Image (tube, rainbow, N blue to C red; front, side, top):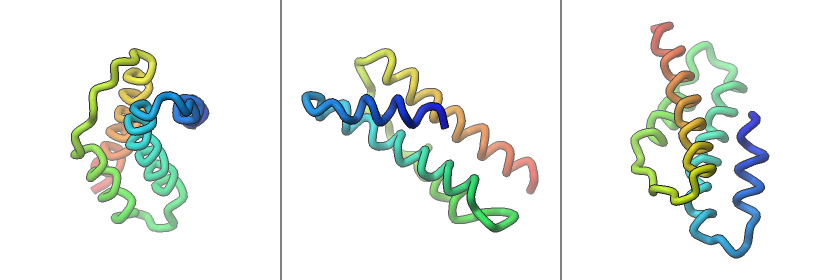
Length: 89
């Protein structure tokens, strides 16, 4: 997950609490994507449901273009993974 180090770097800036709040949902999505990658089931229903739930949550707009682009990348990856599993069904 190439996005994780960038997210962690952005989240570690103590002067930017707003950035932390904006980054946390993307971190959660990366955790859910990781769970999906490590699921033992052929169709990891719980991991897929958690990822879908994350996508349905409203996202706070980020003023930082780099942060916004990173979050867009995470969202795209989540949608691609869901589409791959949807095609199997």
